[in-house]
Amino acid sequence: AFSSMHVRRNDFQFKEMWLSAEQITANSAKVFEPKEQLYIATDERSDSKSAGRPNFDPDLLRVNDHSWFAPLSAVYRTRFLGDFAGELSDTLHSLLGCIEQLVCSRSRVFVGTYKSTFTSYIHRLRGYMRDVDQKQFLYTHARYPEDYTDDKGGVGLARKGPTWSAIGGGQPFWGREFLEAWEETEVSMW
Figure 1 (cartoon, rainbow, N blue to C red):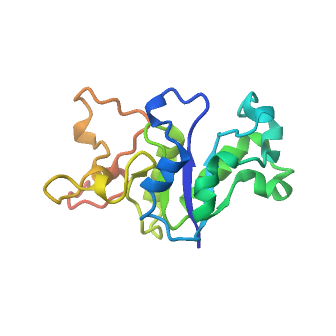
Figure 2: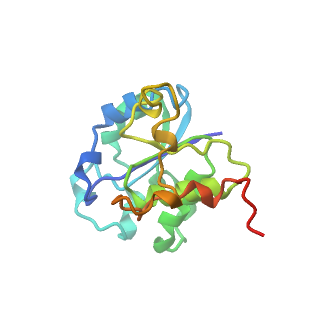
């Protein structure tokens, strides 16, 4: 078993989601188990040689400087796409992101980057999979469990994804998944 995380950086337009690795480690400390295998899907480029490369550059598969993630690696057994360069050497590079999404969708627990469409699709995949138990929307910017309950002890952030009925209130809904798409309801459609 393993858990996974998506850390979006580089050209991500929502800079408020750019957290330090120390903050991400602190926020997810109660989500993952110590020394757990943690797959990290990321576009972070720690070394200056790979920093300027576009996301579709085939050589990114060979990036193995993940020093930015040292705080996470000190607590968990971290793995990255580049760790599987040998197994993926014949894979079309345009499919690597899709492969990372599938890997993350099958993990025990997934923590993503808020406002990221990459993360959002992983949430959707996990939602559709009946054998995936953990379907909470967990994010790197929120401390678990404190930020996931409201001030009355009720369910907070993890269930505050937009719903079909909430579309119209000025909240952008692109990159968000709607729980009704996979949760069974008592309303019959037939």
